[in-house]
Length: 196
Image (tube, rainbow, N blue to C red):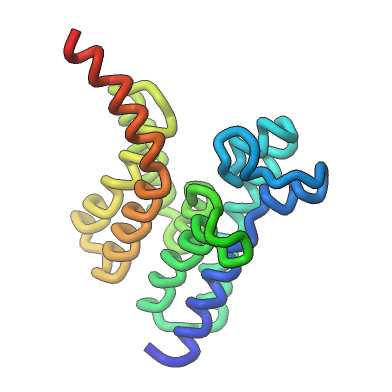
């Protein structure tokens, strides 16, 4: 990996740290979105404060930075191995943004934007797996998280490059970690039903 690759990976992390929802709510209301609702800076929490327009702007803004990170990496012709690290870095930047003392969002919109730019078939596979899982279990978010977990296995089965599979696996672990409280609550709700 060259110095140019490393510099761009760092820049991708910093780009990820520009959390759309935080700055939108700060501009509109002067509030810190992290003091409201779920405490996240993502589209769902912003929607609670600013309504549907805030939800849409945040969703697209967060997805756009993931998309731009990959497109610019390819435009500047860094190595494909480094591009796969850019994918992870921009998601990490959104979840642990330096300007916000490492308290950001949960990474789904940013990851989807990055996946679309990295390889559109990955984004389609993610959607397809999510919809398939929703047939067996209601809940878009939990089905989507399970799809993130399964996607690296599907990529491996499709014989995609090792660095791509590793980047998908790393992204999945980071996103699942960011959603750990939601996952814990979901299992807590299911457990009493099984005991009954």
